[in-house]
Length: 407
Image 1 (cartoon, rainbow, N blue to C red):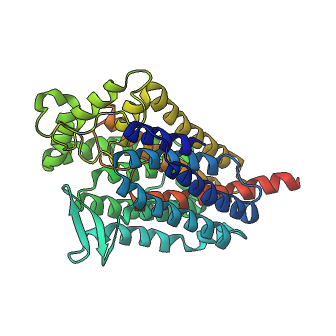
Image 2 (image 1 turned 30 degrees about the horizontal axis):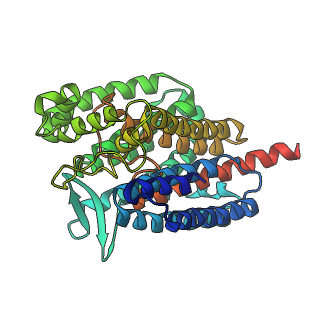
C-alpha cells in the first residue's frame, strides 16, 4: 500500500493523473516479498517476524524516491532488489540446518575480506570514481567488493573472538596478533584505495565486536586513541580528507567549491520544513535542467526524502532504522552460543554504524563520507549485501527462538 501510494503521488505530481503503472509496482513488491516470506517460513519459521517487513518498507521508500528522481535508475534498482531477495532466499535455504558451520572457515573469511578489499586496487579491473577507488568492473558488471568484504570480516571476527575471548579479556598483546594483522591489512588497503568512509566503518566494527566479546573498555579506549592519532596523520597527508574536515567545520566558506554538495543538501532539508513539499514536488533541478545536488540518489538521498516528506517523514525513516537495530540487538541477546551472539551483534552494529555515518555526514554531525544508506540509496552492491546481512540475522533469530520454544 505504501509503495502504491508513493508511486501514485509521484504520478499525480508529474502528470496530474493516477497511472496503472503505480499499481504494477505495488504488485511487483507484493509478489517479490510474498516469495521471500514463504521461503523464510519454510527455512526459518521461528525467525524474527519484523525484520523482513522492515527491510521491505525501507526498500519501498528508497525505490519510490529513486523513481521520482530518475525512472531509469529505479528500474535498475528494482532488478538489484530481485537479485538481493533471491540471494536472501538462497542464504536461508543453504544455511537453514546450521549456519554455525561458517565458524570452521573463519580464517578463510578473513583472507577473503582482504582480497575483496584489494580488488579495486588492481590495475585492470579497478575503477576510480570521484577520487575513491572502490569499484571493480568485469565486462558489463560493475560492483563494490567492499560491501561483501564487511560480511566476510564479521564472520571472521565472530569466529575468532568466540574462540579467544577469555584470553583476550586478560589483555595479552600476543592474543590480539591475528586480529591486528587482519585489521591493519584492511586499513592499509582502504587508505590505498582512498575509501575512508569504509575505513571508519571497519574500524568501528572492529572495536565494537572486541568490546562485545571481552566486555572490557580498555581495548576501545586504546582503539579510539589510535583513531585520533591516525586521523590527524591522514588529515595532514591526504588532501581529500583535509577538504572534508574543512567542509564539515565551515561549509559556508566554500559554497561554490568543495562544499557545494553539502550546502545544497542542507538547503534541500531546510526546504522540506515540518510536513515536506510532497512526493514529486521537491526542487532538485536548476532552471536549465541540471541537478542541484550531484549524486542525489546515492550519497544524498536522505536530503531528497527530508525535502519531500519533511521533518515528520525524515524522522520516521530514522525510527524505522532504529527499530531494525533494536530487533537485531535483541536477537544477539537471545542467541544461545558465543558465535551466534557475536555474529548477530556484528551484523547489527555494522548496519547501525553505516546508517549513522551517512546520516551524520549529511546533517554535519561528523565529516561527510561517501557510503550508502542501507536499503534506500541507489546501488546494487549495497542492496544485495544488506539482504545477505538480513538473512544472517534471521538465521540466528530462528535458532534462538526455536531453542526457546523447545524448552
